Image 1 (tube, rainbow, N blue to C red):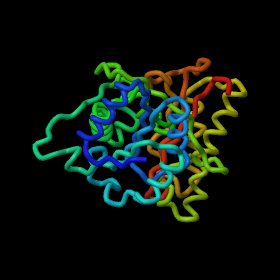
Image 2 (cartoon, rainbow, N blue to C red; image 1 turned 180 degrees about the horizontal axis):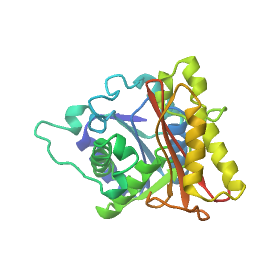
Image 3 (cartoon, one colour; image 1 turned 60 degrees about the vertical axis):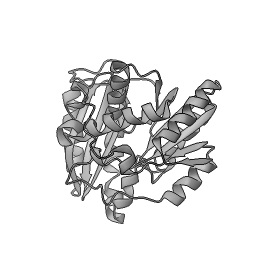
Image 4 (tube, one colour; image 1 turned 120 degrees about the horizontal axis):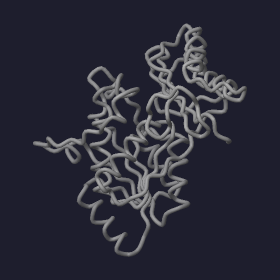
Length: 284
């Protein structure tokens, strides 16, 4: 496994790999890796000749009030995990490499980024789209792997890749959960023991929604209301949004059609903001 710090060097390596006929799988991360990230690395290893992981905490996707400076880091551990899962190259640029003096060009996503996360974090997806576009140009992957936990992000990235003619495939891999159902996230480390217990309300809400759909409840507003009441009963929880939307474009829907809906949750447990989602109305 090789550690690469410079964009120019990473581009050169990627070009050589492509010329040699190698298929490049790419997993972009912000580090502090957990089993969710590693499932993406494993998926890349299964499909591709060469696996490249990036580790970079991107400042432009954080607002001034968010946790950029506190975001957890453990590079030594991350590199060991990458090596143990068959990563060939790890790209670890610094801020000056990604945003050099005079940098002023950004990628502005469209309507798919405007609501939900975009409503509560209005600058977030512009930062995401910009850094992902840069990483795609640097790493030059054939396939890029993202996690379903960041569902809206995956749709934003797919739309950007299509609109800007990136010559690659986006593969979205399933959410990886703790044994008790909590979706894995680097931010879970912020939770106290009591908050960790309270955080299970998101997974329990998802299970409740699935039960409602299994009993033929198809009204999106009814499901949202039921879940709102359920989550609100947890005193440590503060709801940002509960939304049942079209899973292809995140537009509002009145009725769940088979295989067409996604439930999206954003809930603050204490000071920690957690997101989760589940596809509804399709066979598992």
